[in-house]
Length: 277
Image 1 (cartoon, one colour):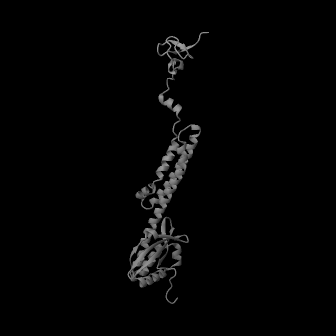
Image 2 (image 1 turned 120 degrees about the vertical axis):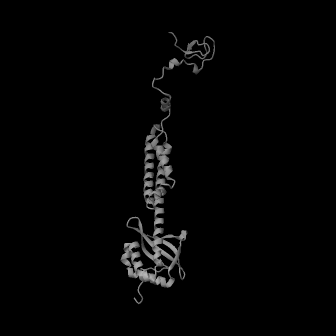
Image 3 (image 1 turned 90 degrees about the vertical axis):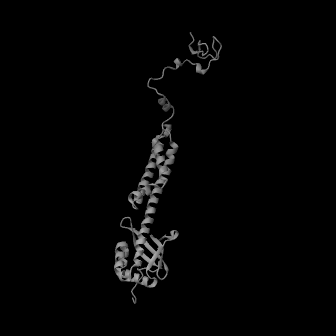
């Protein structure tokens, strides 16, 4: 039987058996690089270097990477603030909701990425897993940030309007009290306190402290809570003295904070009664 000669010597070019270690003609050592390339057979005509690389290394999972990058972006407080710049204070709520939706989308892409990277069909399993908690954290951050800033700013703005009733001249107390009650008060406040009762209380406050001149906000103690409602606290500088002012607020009729009570040095129109009653 004729032995197959498939290995050529790189030194002299003589053919040698495939299992030979030295050339039978010149004695040169035969290496693995000396294998006749013709024995490997030609590459397919449509085979490119990129195709060869893809066959060796799985492609990336764009779902995994997309979810991860979106989750990282949501960890910065930009969504709610960006919508506030476009839509005003209410844009914070819109931005918070969109940020929450973005976080859920990032988590869903992470879950899709996990399935796509099973059995090493795609790369990126680690980032797919990471995208899920990061997406949820980023979405919740945007949601809480949007609603928190909105609530603080809305109540602060409403509080500044509400305390102005304490600057009313005595001759306008009845008119100002009725406007305050109807425009700012909650439905419960309007049911519990009449315009005359509010005007009488305002008159008693002005008699005791004088008209309000200015207010000062202590940022550390500006907000509090009481039986499910929010307190907005300021210090009022009146003509005669200074006294604490508390505004009891509820979110009612959409996104507008409404006044459920107003207190000056502990005195409230809910507790006021005409003299002799």
